Length: 94
Image (tube, rainbow, N blue to C red; front, side, top):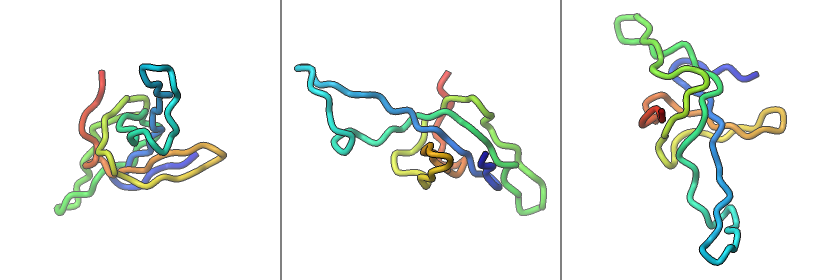
């Protein structure tokens, strides 16, 4: 499995099949980019200027809201993931 470094977080973006009122399924290139995802793995945290490690605020299994154009998409074992910096996470969805 992929293990993010530093303050990076590995997410599995949540996508939903979207239908219009008339029942037409929208193509994936027409839909908005997903902004919620499940945390798959978390790095060790950010290193502060004084050398201390700041632990991440999220943990594996959390559902999070992230910036619309954040991160880099990666593919591993046929699955697509998103690697984002912790600062690009907006909130934990409870």
